[in-house]
Length: 188
Image 1 (spheres, rainbow, N blue to C red):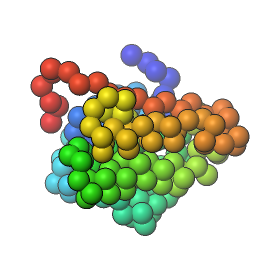
Image 2: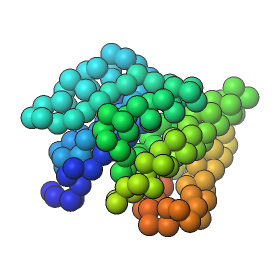
Image 3: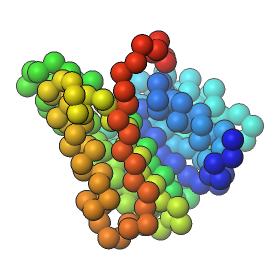
C-alpha cells in the first residue's frame, strides 16, 4: 500500500511491541525515517536491528518518557538526526489500572504528561513541516473502564484536541485513537 509517506520523518513512543511496533513497521514499509523509543534497551536494540534493512532509517532509543529531560532530549536529538519531524505517534501507557495513588501518579506522568511533553517538544519541528501529524494512541478505558487509567485516557484525548494545539498548527492532522478490548492474542 502506498500511503504517500515516503521521505517523511516520524517519532513513535513505545515502539518495540504491540501497536507501537506495528506502527514503526508500517512507517518503515512506507519509506518513513523513524525514531522510536521504549523502556527496555534489549527490546529497543532487537527492534532496531530487525527493522534496519534495505536502507531503512530506524533509530531506537531506550527511554522512560516520564523523565522529562530525557524525553525532550530524545525528541530534539531525533529531529536533528532525521533532519526534522513530520509526524509523532504517542503510544505509551503506564498501564496503571488499579485505583491506587501510585497508579494515578504513574498514569498522569506517563500517559498524560508524556504525551503533552512530547507534543510540546516536537512543536517547533511540526510547525516547520509541510505534513505535520500528531497521533495519540489511548485506550478503550478512556470512556468506559478503569477509573485511574480511564480518567487519564480521557485527558489525553481531550488534550490533543486541535483547539488545544493552537492556531500555529491549524493545518496539522491530529488523531486520538482509542483502542478497543478484543479477544485477539497479544502482540509481543
